[in-house]
Image (cartoon, rainbow, N blue to C red; front, side, top):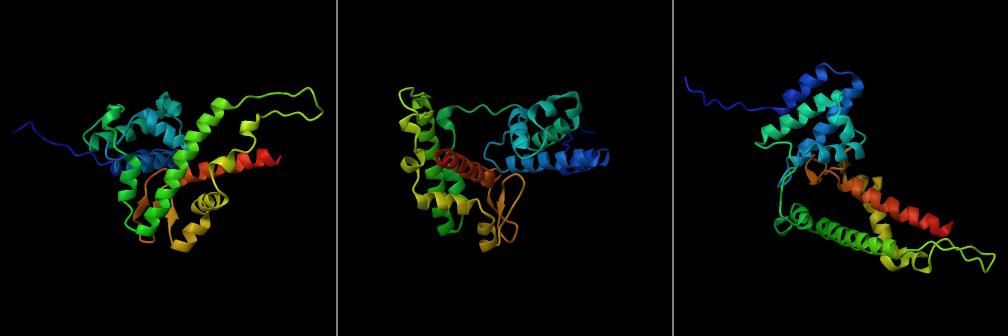
Length: 231
């Protein structure tokens, strides 16, 4: 008999076995991690490292990286290992030189079949990139000062007084708010998962894990800055 036997690991079977011996809270955590791992499997170079999975899990309300690494996180690690093994890889972070990194934005846009939606998402990505770059520059230039020469105290430099006017127009901000709103889902018959995956009415993935949560965080940053300025 040949010893060259190939065993195919089925992550869904591993999930079922782990949930069978877990309480409801842990079952929910296992489901969150499973959804994230499923999303990673769709990436060009999936990252099954505990650091990456833990970060995505924590942002989705699941176990943190440290919880997964702890003694009590053995079931989470087993599920991660099962996914990695099923794809012929391991839980080490992929080593890719910067010069060979794929353009994720372009890859994302290529997956969107609808031209109108592709144009909207392309605009959102471009504005987000510009916002993040200028926000980093703004933080580097921002100084906290107290003007003792008058009764009015200024705690923010003039350069940081109104960053929204120099970053995004009112129309662009409203477009981002719409992209993060339940109305967008209702108008198009779409749904979104806890991990930020956007799906159409037939359950087909339009945007991968992290998309809707990323837009929501961006809008939250804009609203926070606006509230500080108005306050």
